[in-house]
Amino acid sequence: MASVDSRHRPNDVDRGRSSRGLAVVAAVAGLSVLTVIAVRAVAADAKGCGSGVRLTVAAAPEIAPAVQKIAATWVATNPRVGNQCVSVQVSPMSPADVAGVLAARSGGRINTGGQAVAAANTPPPTDTQVPAAWVPDSTSWLGRVQAINRDAFDPEYFSLAMSPVVLAGPEPVVRSLQNGKPRKLAIPDLARMLDRVLRGGDKTVRIAMVEPRRDAAGLAGAVLLHDAVVNTPAQLPVLVGTYRSVVLAPDQASLLKGFETTQAVAPMSEQAMLAYDAAAPKVPLSAITLEPTVALDYPYAVVTGKPRAITQAAELFRGALNGPEVRELLAKAGFRAQDGTAETGFPAGHGASTEPIVGMPLDDPAKIAEVVGIWTASKTPSRVLALVDVTASMNNPITMPSGAQVTRMQVMQQAAVDGLRLFTDDSEVGIWAYALSLAPNRDHREVVPIAELNRAQRARLNAAIAAVQPAPTDVAGLYDSLLAAYQKMKDGYRVDRSNTIVVFTDGRNSKPGGTTLDGLQLGLEKLADLTKPIRVVLLGIGPDVDLTELETIAKATGGKAFQVSDPAKIGSIFLNALLRP
Image (cartoon, rainbow, N blue to C red; front, side, top):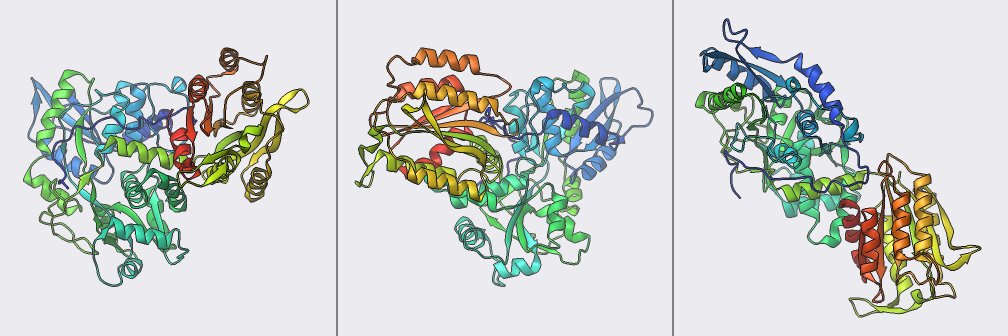
């Protein structure tokens, strides 16, 4: 592991944004928050500098007071750009809100877990609403913005402070988890704790966290849970269940309030824990050090696209933020220096020591994109229609990777049952079966109507899947059935859900005189509505599948096509299909 570097060059993240209508906070909401909070901004003005250069700095709320003190000291030295004096206005801003504003400035959106609003309906921020410099709590925010605009920031920036992410909870709970012997919690230890707490029925303690899409410490926790659970792609469905078991808080204040009534531990920054304990609560929190340690690294980034004088002022202020007196000021507020050392005044205690800590910033774009995508999929309801091939060929045998012989129908049934577990209880799922002339004047039949996936609906679906039998024909009217399914999904479209058709097939369309592949593509094109995206995921079972045909269909709908021979892999296949455009 490397310590938190004093300079970072982040890359793109959040590449996995898809058309599933996953919940994101609209940038317009961020603009509203920015406008309100800007009123509470604190300005550091040099005497008589009313018409000089005004530098606006947005900072994470916990570090904003220290940044303001540094700004006041610096402004008192009468810094100048050319012949103009410089003043600094520091606004305490949630990093998620600032990221939303910067994304909207570039015509994009950041997935922060709120409602989706079309980018076209989001007014771009004015120049005064965009800060000239930004101190978020984590480099991960810079990378997420740069996924939308690579040139959003000056490429050179440095870490102002560091705070390791710890597993914090009420002292009695922490003592119990550690058996009275304080020690670091490694990934294997975390895995064992998850087995006991989330999957073993242990009700004595819960895992909690702030929404990872809005909170960097929560994101660090989601990354650590991923590493503790997932060793192979086949374990991704287990991670979905783990994420759903987490007690979720909308913000840190709610998380801290919850500790008063819930026996829980949660990933949070060491600084946040120390600040909470400094207020002398009835039950103080204590920290368990995680290994490897992920750290919040508080980068100072200069925003591009501002007038040259303001950019120069931001670059000058960067120098003022990197001195020994600054580190001591930050230490008193519970922050460590960039290299993980605790400077004079650091309020050690409750599991936080003055020993140096080596921490890794959240700066792996691929890992962040994967974790955010899986977290979103695990929390987002879907509306799904499963289209099941029941032609006679589904009775043909297939050899499993283990060497066992099963029918294609059995593979489909197991895949459907396993896939059903991945959808949230507030999802809506139904089943159609298809084969030539399966019903009067059509090739499909409704087996289970689309309905909310409560316990009764799950029972109906599982029973129907178990009872399905191949029809006495080997002719499949896939194209006509798919067009009918698409129309059905469009008619009942839910804007608050990802709308998906899942097709199980062991071959190809074989209906003589029916709709052709070109006709299907044309029909889908006519039905398609950009405001109602419907994805088609096709799962081909057995060696007779024409994967090229299935991929052509999937491409026309922004979906995915896969070949399935092992039901054990259906979980990872579904997640791949649902997470990526």
